[in-house]
Length: 470
Image (cartoon, rainbow, N blue to C red; front, side, top):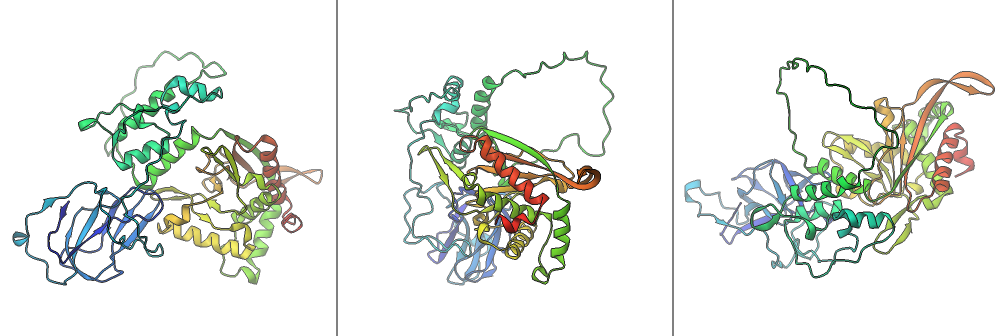
């Protein structure tokens, strides 16, 4: 990266969208050196750990230099493009002043005002690089030593570690360590000058998890004598393909590891007859109030879950580890897991509990369309309280979903299939599905989880309960 020295040249930095992000990958440049740009014009598309977003330039001018090529991951606060706001033509390559290397991090820089960020986020006056340092949580070191982990499992948390110097690590590595619950002071660095790398963090996680593995309750059969290896299969392509894990996929991986090893998961299942629900879906499609709206079984499943939460509000909560408190939410931001080309994302419908059925249908339609286009904003994936994942669209009967971090429950919906079912005393073909509810056993006990799952199933079997129970 180079920094322009001309006083009329403005450096546009990778913005902080206010969601705790530390880096983003430049997916595509829409301008080149010499192009004229205007205030608000989109100059590039970047992929954060949450979504792909377009960045508008905040001033008029002529592009002098693109500091990074497409495919580069850049830290927040780093200049990515230089624009001559005086409007002069870009100089020829041989006339450009010799570039000087810019510092990787400028912690002392305090500009008068932060550069405008994404459209709709407004402008903050604080520096984009300022990050308040917080003392490490007492249980951070626990996850780095097998003995300490065992203490935690037994209910005895060790005392916090004191007097440890701040380890060297880049902001993205620090975020990865935070997401995985790794105390950087316990990680052995392998990078140059003692810098901790991503590989070091993952190695620390693996070292802790290995001693925790327990033998299976049922003995595994003895391995059979290896047979003579068969001749390798011939493929037209290479035998292996390596896919870099970054952006949404990297964030999802880190979040799921953190969820799996932080919240004690419990999953319960129920199989139910949803024939009446499917009939209601067909009736709603003919209703003028739903003209132009997306009406499908997921709509009624979402409404059934919202009603079940209203009847059992304690399920809509989160666990505050620092305060050792259960935080019950009096609103429902309903997350819908969506598979996209960039990976799994979970945007949510804000205040879904307050929406009518047509309003909920409209919000679901907008959520799905935006996700398919890859235009889901970071804010749309924040502050979710409970999630639905519809694995049935892939023909899967059910699953044991992992919690979205910060939430206490997630409902998996299996495929709806015609099956023999006892209906009114006779075996008849009925439309049947299996629901699975995973919940955080720290704040949701078996009784509460069972009530919620049973309520959802009861509503789907008798949709008229949407009226009587709402």
